[in-house]
Length: 237
Ligand SMILES: [Zn+2]
Image 1 (spheres, rainbow, N blue to C red):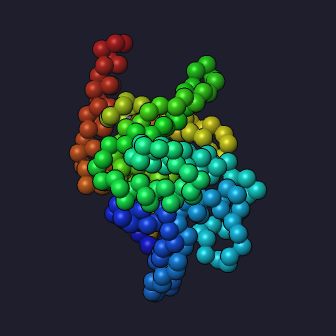
Image 2 (cartoon, helix red, strand yellow):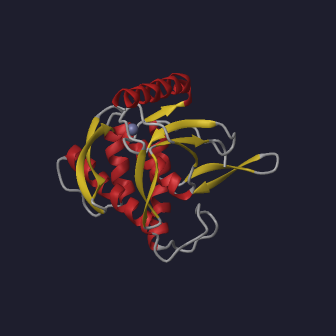
Image 3 (cartoon, rainbow, N blue to C red):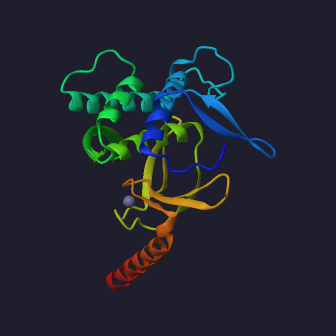
């Protein structure tokens, strides 16, 4: 696969909802091949695809892929919500990619959208999922769906960073992975597979994303923040 670039609004609509070409790097040349829309790929992952050759992006099919089912359910729900809010009626039985294409064509990239978003809360070792209303722009929502499906099939290489997030202060984040709840650092550096370079820093606790253009500022901010916390501890001791 070629280096992932940030796709445009229209490219994300296309990738999510329709068959589209992707570049496959061979030994010394790039070739194009066609893959299903990401939502179709995700549905295949959940329900088992119809046998149609080697075009789908994943080879290992588990009988039931729980993370894929969770993601499909979430995206399906959010698409219904934004479609319903835009067209002021309840969507029919259309496939989610069709509703997505209708909504996205009607919306402007910077339109504010409100979707339900699950938040897992941990208290006394028990986890509860609460649904919050999440406000974001149309382009951010597309980008979130695009990225979460892409990363389900091709998890990014991540370098953990134990420092506190400069936005929310968290050092740890709890995540569902293969049906288990695991603890990881909040800050994670995403490494581009093709260049081996750090691509972006993410906070898995608050969802903040910083791209490489602000790394210098971010590293300074993290260091200053760590030093401040260190000083506070000394004062408290
Ligand atoms: Zn954070």
